[in-house]
Image 1 (cartoon, helix red, strand yellow):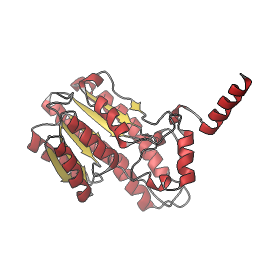
Image 2 (cartoon, helix red, strand yellow; image 1 turned 90 degrees about the horizontal axis):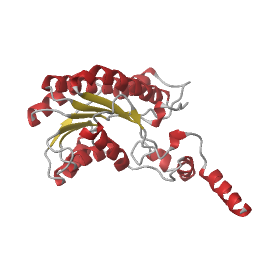
Image 3 (cartoon, one colour; image 1 turned 90 degrees about the vertical axis):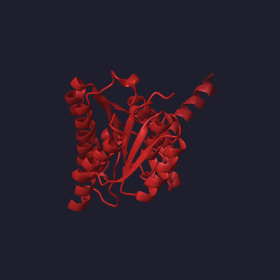
Image 4 (tube, helix red, strand yellow; image 1 turned 45 degrees about the vertical axis):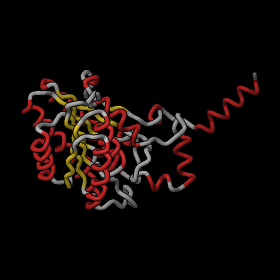
Length: 270
């Protein structure tokens, strides 16, 4: 028996990374899962992994930058499974090879359309379905540690994730009377396709590890564990907040090398 038995979950951006891990974790915990992405090949692999958990799965090609795709996704989910109890707005993109001085309108619009507009309309469609059912529900949006930090190279991404942080507060307030919670997850540096360019450069990868107090880069399963809790009945009193599975990186400035040097110095004095 899993703590999501009898639930129907929807996950966008589920073809890989955090989205795939959340879909599989929800299935492992007992939920049937609708998965969505523009990457149909990746979706099929995620669907296979969900079926291995002996749960039903619906795979839908969906571009969350298009509201009509989102509305169709929710309608197909309900038609297939009979309802919707958990929705994760996970789909996201990040701009590459640009900065505050050179970003084009096209780059800005694509990032905001997927990461902010797409999140809003995914939450809206799911919330309206949950209200109509009258059974409550769980809304989860994927933000980032970049909701707290700035980056000269990814201004649209940072703006979109800061916006997601505020969106969940608005939805939490609007949905509370209907027994629907809404929270965000703000992953740190996680082993996904999005962070691959960072991790493939050894000095930068080591820098990220050195900045992370627990001393490692996170995994999609770390994010999925948080999502599983927020999706459960155990999180019924948690709403309007953001949880950071980031190894402590947003706690403050940290240098593992400096911490080790201080420890060695303290041992030398003892």
